Image (cartoon, rainbow, N blue to C red; front, side, top):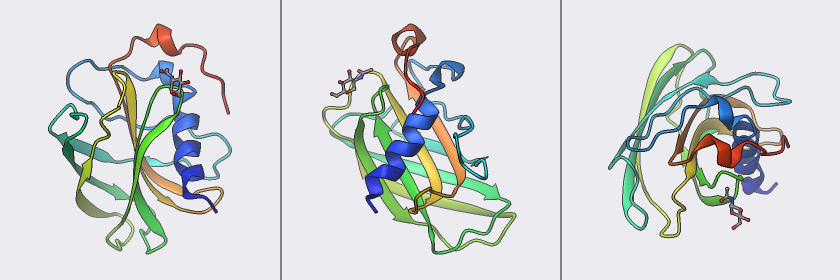
Length: 159
Ligand SMILES: *[C@@H]1O[C@H](CO)[C@@H](O)[C@H](O)[C@H]1NC(C)=O
């Protein structure tokens, strides 16, 4: 199946209720993802910090992703990082292996990725620990929305 489906699925689902998420103008603050419609299990929150913060279009950024999930992270699960505008148009999506991790055991992954030059002023960064299946099994998730005023995105349709 098309990997892009996963990213779009996650981002659209979360952006559909993005009004509930505080918007930041300077630092990028990651929070829990809203419930994702139609998923059997809702993802647990993971921690993400980025450097530089905020991301700089056209430069690399280092993502430090950590957390402790109650589910085992097997080889099937990948780290997915996606940047999208607030309609869910995906500007960049990265897929990385996760270290196999037993349940309730901390993990920490550091990845450096290129930020697209054409990233708009208002954007979302979604980070998930997920299978690349349809539907995805998203066991860990974090979302940041940067640079927007919520009135711009009030009418986003629920997928
Ligand atoms: C996101 O990008 C798409 C395609 O370029 C565009 O049609 C849409 O208006 C953009 N959404 C926002 C909120 O800027």
